[in-house]
Length: 223
Image (cartoon, rainbow, N blue to C red):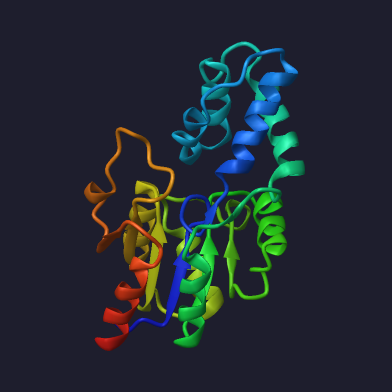
């Protein structure tokens, strides 16, 4: 493997965005005169997106009567609160420093719409450091299709075979493999309790961002 770039999924991989999701869900319950729920119920379904979080927050089925109004309320509230509590995972800033010192390019390929993703990257002062940000708005098909990663590789001018894609969901690994990238699955992200990242077929599985240092070192030494 000739490693020239590293691409990250955003939620649950590069950034711990769960606190903002949880805050929005709890605020919605309060607004509807309901008691708070266990934060973990929200964290467990973050990878399923707004629909999954709304369903968990209110204990209703997707598509049930009143569900769409709740989903739209969630999105409106999240737009105002998407970059308040979110932050890089412990060790991630050190990893990004290492990547930049090694003169590698890094960027983000996320299923989060650009209306949320851009403000978060700007608020955390990562927008100018990231070489590329690809969101569902930019492609015909989101992950697990390879479109997002192929576009990111095109934008940075690097072949997929020279790129490592890191994610916390089976769709990330499926997309990376389909695009021809090397893949790393992380277990510290928003993994559903019934899921197991070691079954996704990634080239490597890590439990902490700083463990990715060793992955990068091995890749660079083999170049």
